[in-house]
Image 1: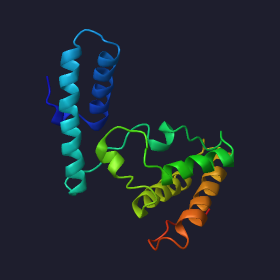
Image 2: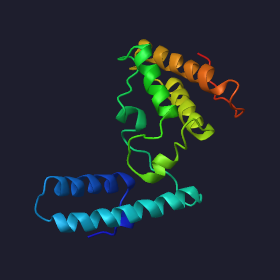
Image 3: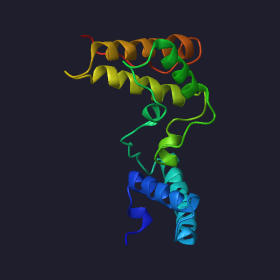
Length: 167
């Protein structure tokens, strides 16, 4: 059996979910699952410290924070997306996604770090669109990008705002 330090962040998150299910559903091996969760938390803390010290790169999850929260440009109206973006920027209680290192990369509520993360994420979605990306989805991303610029960046931060590719 491989060491927890050899697991990817995604594998570690899945191991946590499985152990948590054993505990909450009172399945056999509950004691072992409780011990495993303690070990996983230690490994997550170690990875978070390594990330914060610049010694570890983030392994990006297949399903990120916005997706976990149900964000779907092209399938939500502007008010719904605006409320969700506001929650992401302002909330103390974001859902746990994959690893503490990934979550640490989002920074604190209303912080420059969190706004940088979100603005570059939206910029990348807009700039990396492909032939299968619906025009409505691209326009929604652009609206959301402009919304966070107008409502959170202007008069609050001075970092270089990400540029969109010219079409």
